[in-house]
Length: 325
Image (cartoon, rainbow, N blue to C red; front, side, top):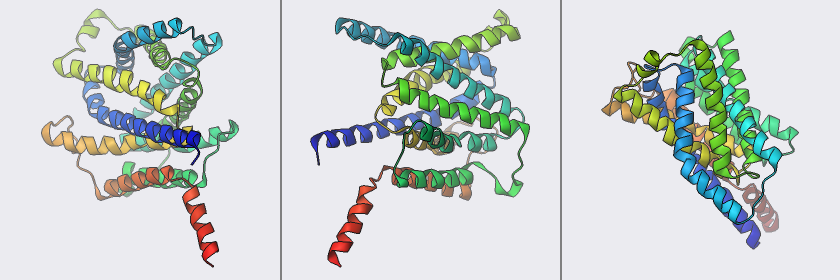
């Protein structure tokens, strides 16, 4: 294999492993998010986790910016403005519409409809001329089936409500955020893009929270030991670490494959909820997985593995069979 191709393949594998770690972090953060919603409204959660994330990233941001300056690395001024704005606004709108939808639809349906971004990303990518192997498109279809098993209770049927529409709009913005990261992560300092993405989201959320009438009393009442630990985890680990790693991973992985790997968040969310629930009852709802959820998790994992297999394997096998005949 050509040395440059081998290097590219190693970078793709490394990027994929990083994105799996991101999906794991976001999956585990479900427990902390479930805890903190008892004490804070969604806008307060958004701006607090964003500003905490920025503080956590600031030493790395300052260090890398000074390094860029020393090496005389100059960035496109247009990208410096558009990058954080596009990523941050998409991230905020995705979270906002998801939260609005949650008010009138179930958490299970919200999880499934949100995960439909794995279909939207390849559709949008076609317009950007970013194509994948046939195995990736097959993997997307398989993953959707797995997420259907993982997220929905078939005994209750399936109906479409206004809340579901809002969640689907949120899924569109999650897809756009993934594509924005794919574009700008190759053009900007990763810590700069991650920090100012969070800053954009945090400022918008804070403005809305102030308009809604947050007071000093209501602000201080949000903080208990439990909520403080949860919001710190969401700010430092789920935001600062995970969003930065997402940008690192997406530098080397096709956006469609990235969205497929990130959909493992649903699987890790279910698994971590089961394990943590055995030691700490963070919810009144029993977190044990049903047979359908176990089947769905296995299907999604298999879909991700299939997406990582090079299509050339099957082509070579076909050629070898022809030679033998």
